[in-house]
Length: 148
Image (cartoon, rainbow, N blue to C red; front, side, top):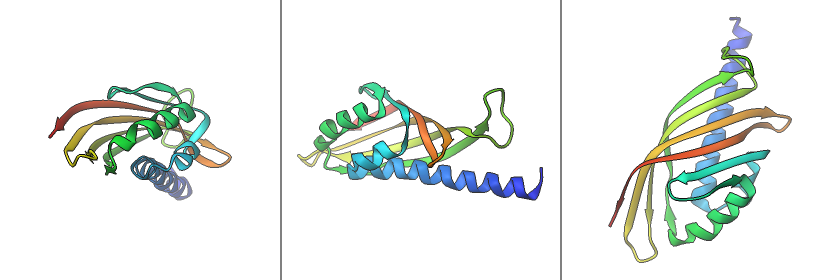
């Protein structure tokens, strides 16, 4: 691998990190326009693993906008990001598609003041578009929760 390819891979990793961080910030801040903008036009989100819905990102954004006001305080922590670049036929070091697995902890607070915390794993799929890296899909796999 040449130094030029290495630099491109590092830059892609930074861009993907910004994409995932932008996702967390959009959900926590309730910025549904920003949330929609993180997805490719045909992007989808699947929250069934945490009791939610699955569908086109714009429809899921509407559902989140209606649901998350139950939790006026939200703070997504998305960690242990594992990036794997891929091409349609395999997994070279660089490519225009990437799979990102990441763990999350999501402390929230109900309007009543009660705490709710959940954690699990995200499976993000991203692809390079004319506008940069965008989410093709997000799948939530909640592994635990604590209420009260």
